[in-house]
Amino acid sequence: MEPGEKKLIEEKRAIEEIDEIFDIKEKEAEEKVEATLFIAGRFLSLNELVTLTDLNPIMLREILSKLEKKYSSGAIIVIKKNDYWKMDVNEKYFYIVGRLATGKSEFTRAEQETLSIIAYKQPIKQSVVVKIRGNKAYEHIKKFLEMGLINAKKFGHTYNLNLTEEFYNYFNLEKKE
Image (tube, rainbow, N blue to C red):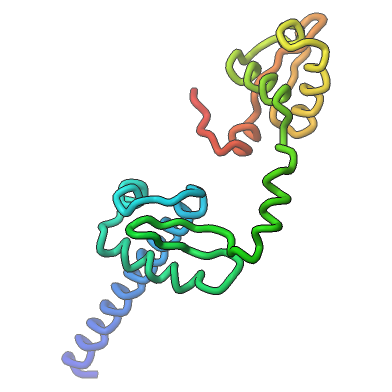
């Protein structure tokens, strides 16, 4: 193989690697915009999207256009109104959304309040939680233990309650040391 041929092959490989890296970065940017629209649940301005995704407006507009085409005919659609964008359920499936939206939340308000106290005051004695929240707190604590959101360590006649790693994963929170 001649030196010129070898150099051409190396240049071609380098260009292919650069193209591959570019494609990966472009896919990551598209997924970032897609996730942002999905989780927002409301119309977002181009400025908000720029701030949330850290993408330049030109690239962002191109990605939004791609997503609009990608989701043009399915159950999930991307809607553009003026310079605002939103991911939503296709109109023909609103009846399903309506049924889900009026359904029960994962935790009752009372359970949410009990878990909030444990999270805020941890480590906290179970007896203190029961004094604050009443006897229903025993049921709440049992549910949280079964779900792995808290752990209980024997402490005299009661238990010390702490959040588990699963709690942070479940609610997508970062654990503060």
